[in-house]
Every structure is written in C-alpha cells, then in structure tokens.
Length: 290
Image (cartoon, rainbow, N blue to C red; front, side, top):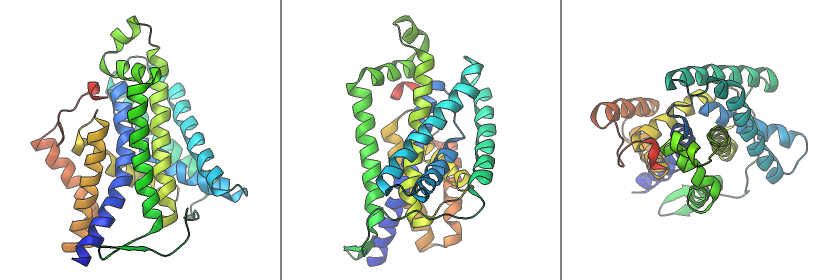
C-alpha cells in the first residue's frame, strides 16, 4: 500500500505538470482551431528565464514572476510575427508555423543559455512530508498549488471578466464576435500569451526537481498534447483531468510493469483515444467549450 500511495503521489505530480501544458494547448486551440506545437518550448523558456533571472541576483519570487511575464511576452510576440500575418488561414498552416517556431525557440535557447542542464532553487526548503505511507516533496506541493491556482484563475477570467467573455466569444464564433465589436486578433494574441504563461509556470515549478535545459520542451509538449486529447480539446477542465489521468497511468505503468514503458504510455494513450473516442474521455471536443 505504501508503494501504491507513492505511485499515486508521483502520478498526480507529473499529471499536474501535463495539465498545465495541456491548458495551453486548449486555450490556443479554442481561439484558432489549430494545435500550437510550440507549447513545449514555452515550458522550457519558463525554466530557463527563471534560472537566468536568479543568476542576476534577483530573489526567487521576483525571478519566477519575471520569467512568467517574459515567456508570456515571447508567446504574444510569436503570435504577432508568425501567426497574425496568416490571417484566417487554414489551421494546418498555423500548425506548420508553430512547429517551425518551436525549432527556432529551441535553437535560440541553446545559443543563449548553453547546452547544459541548469538548476533552479527549490521554492521551500525542508524534508519531505509523510502522508499515508508516501513521501511528498515540498516542491510537489507547489506544483499542485500552481495547477489549482491556474484552474481557479482561468475559471474566474472566463466567467467574471470582459476579457474572458471576449475570449469565449472568439472561441465560439469568430465572425459573430467581430460583429459585436470584439477585436478577434487581439484575443488570439492574448490566448498565445496566456498559453505561454501557463507553460512557463509549469516549467518553473518543476525545474527545482528535474533541472531544465534547452531541449526539455519537445518531450513535455508530447505529454501535454496527449493530455489535452485524452481529456478533450477545447475544454480546460477536461484538459486538467486528462493530464492527471495520464500522469497516473504513467506512474502505475512504471511502478508495476517496467520503467522503460513510462514514456510510451503517452503515445499509446494518444493513439487509443484518437481511434476509440476522438472527442476525449470527458465529453465532447470543440472550440465552444471554453
């Protein structure tokens, strides 16, 4: 039972990271109808910016905040320079551009930060906490807290603010949103910035446990995309559920089968869901779900 509890803790920890990345996929999909395959690079940039700002002597809280802001700015700039000129292009063209953008960001990070893995200080010092036979690292609590905070703030944004309502209108019907005065182009830019901020937050809270490097984005991007598909694209709550389920499946497979199967779980789950239930486990998929 102690081993099972430890596997569940590990699965929920990884699943929370996948959920944050999956939220970014969902937000961009809702506003554009396309998959942003640069989302994993926003995760990488969050950790890299955090390490860089701490190396300048900034306190860790300030470094984390500035890293999220800087990555959000990169996301907005990416949309302005690479996505907006396409206009109302076919989503396939947008997908191809995001793939190219991810390669470019990875190479820029390689030359700017170097090839080595870089550490970020833990947010809270101290020994692990024992609960029901499982050891929970203090940084894991920050990961769970960041995921919960992101979900609550997103729900508040969409339900209680004019900006959120404008984003929802854009996700449901762009032409109708234009007719009622919504600046659709600006909403797409905000979506990319918000998705980048969520990716950066994920990269920051996990970096103290795993360190970060210029090439960590590709792998987490695949996991986040699989989580978004598993839950149901277009539905933020479903994306979070998909991330948690994927994290648990990976952890249980690594614990009870073989650790070498851990990274294959995401691809297997992705293929199975696409064939059996293309709209995800938690309801329909669609841009109107925001």
